[in-house]
Length: 256
Image 1: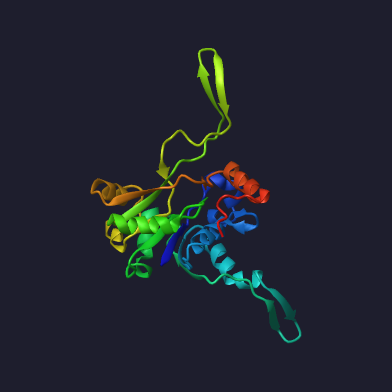
Image 2: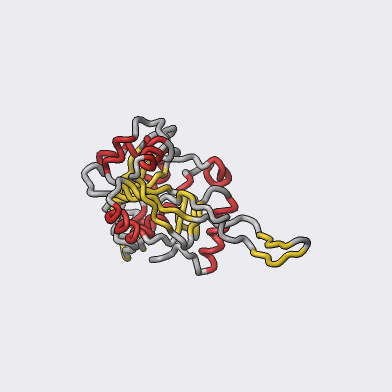
C-alpha cells in the first residue's frame, strides 16, 4: 500500500523555520517532521511513499538523495575518488518525489500524483505537518468495512490554555491545557479509494472544500475517531512543544 504525503506548502506561520526549507523539513529531534510521519506509516507496514513537492522541493530531493549517506559510516578516499560504506542503517522505503507546483492547492497536488495511485485498491493520504499515535492499520480495516470512498481521521486538538471550572465566585477545579473543547477536527491520515481523484478538477482545488464536501454530502466519507495523541505543527510554539516531547524520551507518536 502507498501513502501520499503533502509536502509543498510554504508554512508561512512558521516563517522562522521555513524561510530556507519547506515546512515538512523542519526538524524534531534532528529529523524532519516528514521523517517522523513516514516512520508512523512504516510502523504499520507501509513503506511506499509518494511525496507531493512544491515550495523549495529541491531540499526534500536532496535529503533523500543523500539519505543513505547520512545514515552510514563511510570512508572517502580522495586520491582514488572512492567511497567505502562501513555500516548501513537506512529504512526499506521506496520514495517517489513529484513536483506538484509551488502554488498548487491541496486537492490539485493529489490530482497531480494520480498516475502513481490510480491502480491501487486504496491508498493513504495525509499532510506533512502533523504527528500522532494513530492506529493506521485500524483505520484501513475500518475503511474497508464501511464500503465508502474515503475515511478521515478525526482528532481532538490539545488545548492551548488552562481551563477553570467555576461555581459563582469560586474555582472548583483548574485544568492545565485540557484536550480541546470537545470538538473533533480533521487530523489528516485519510484512507482513500482512487476514484476520489475524479472529484478534483484542477490545481486550484482545495481537497478540504469541494471533494470532501461532496463526499460528506453523498454519505461517502466515514470517520475514524482517534482519541490518542495528535499534534499539528503550525507555529514555532507547536514545533518547540514537539521538540520538548521528543527530548523527554516519551514522544507519544514514536510508535516504532
